[in-house]
Amino acid sequence: MTMALPAPGGPLALLPAYIYPASLAEIEEMFVTRAPHVDERRAIFDAFRSWMEGFDSLFPGTTIWLDGGFVTHKDWAAPHDVDVAVHASGPVMARWNPALVPVFRSYFTDRDAGTQPMGGLVDAFFFASDNPAARQYWRNQWGKVRGRDRNTALGVQKGFVEVIR
Image (cartoon, rainbow, N blue to C red; front, side):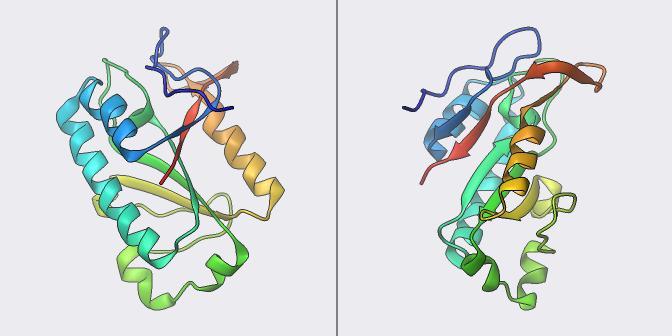
């Protein structure tokens, strides 16, 4: 059973703890059109959509999770990027070609490394979907909550979005 993408709420303007499958149209509606700081969010969303189209053309069949300030409705702070975790199967990861580095800047498979393509508007991380420890790491990372002071709120979890296409 899947849940509809709810509006972020509560004192930190977050999604309730869950992984919410959503189309690009639903993501745009919730996190651009209906969210504060529309102009900043529009630039981020357009960059993400372009990045994803390019990535999908080269590496179809991946799962993409979105997180960070972009998937909130914080009225006190505009997001500066969208955080992306890409799950890729071994065969997809094996198709990586170093000639693509200028397009995506880099390709990493460890959990602590990433890249910021699209002028820094997309903060992308990649991991092997057949690595349960990596999947759990990113699920835990994307569920963490930071307060207005940027410190982690212990014992509190939030939701994030899985792009469906």
